[in-house]
Image (cartoon, rainbow over all chains, first blue to last red; front, side, top):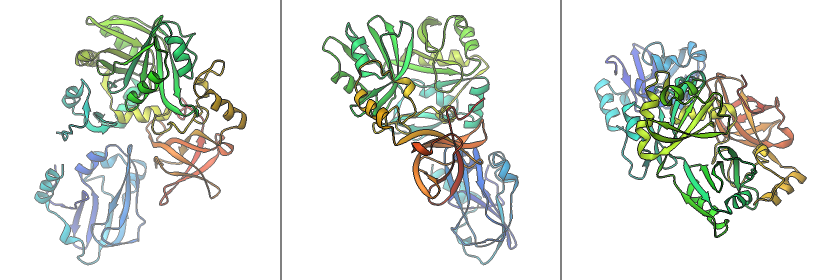
Length: 127
Length: 363
């Protein structure tokens, strides 16, 4: 279930790094734990983000939780389709349910990212 | 597999929930199914078809004896003497200050016998209070352990009951009535009541029979299991109070906008306090709210009008039927008219909303 070509955080976000660009979303494990997602607050395009900043809020029927920036940079794109159809994150967390794209500045945060195998182990240990 | 917590009680249907792939969560001392397929899916299943709920955790108390009617008249806010056998009624146990000890449904199961269906977390407290306030000839006991309760809710409920038991209630069982029926030889008290706003039933029977009854009802293709998540969204849309959230010992039925379930033409514990509240008016009342968009205010958010904090959210979440955030809040009575614009905040985010009468979801 966990794709090979992505990196992961302990907060159950995924990051796809391509050169200086990164796409960020939440993992299948995260969407499954949250349950039906009903609202997503997206960051503003152009906003500067630092590692561990709260950059988006995901609300499910039962609760609200924050998404933290895994990398530093500037927000270049947000998935506006999620504003009216947040359930896409449940249906396609790694693909159509991406949340934002960032122009990455510097390496900070990268040392904390896990690869597929490490993340799978992490999920098992934290169940 | 969910973590095994020995402090949590399990209903007789626990194994059924695991088989159905439920997500199990702790709920007031019990391991209960939060959801099976998803809260929104289960919500619409109940609104449009029919849903099955494990409610075995709720409490049942029996009060009986020659003086039981008089004792309950004194203990409960609703009138008892005009409840005929086979009928039930919603009401409250109140303390001396008019605060709600519990909300419950009282069933007259015999001339001198009553069953009280109470909240699970308050069962022991209720029994203690009842025992303190009944005459020596009246007996009260807790039958929760040996009693199973399954709710069947939704427009398809009567068809399911007919298919499984052959019982055709359409013509005889009115709302807040009950009957004794047989399901595969199992004796069931079938009551036309519920907590969803849909037509439906609550079934009471011997606890060991729970898996058989559950499986029989689920064998009807249109019936699906529903978890506590959807139970909460369904009741919130109707504006039904949840004990411990929207009502408690610090709130009276008048503050909770539930005066319809109080009979002022008789004496009962808490009446003096309610008379005073009626004369002086209550400061705060419970109302529904509807958020501007999908974002939901949650329990604990402050209610603000013109920069002034005038209340607090006691239940809040997403309404699948309305596709908006909704909930219940206490706020100053003078600012509580339906349509009043309010701001809901946790100090970080602000959500625009309007006050709503009950039910919040109007079809």
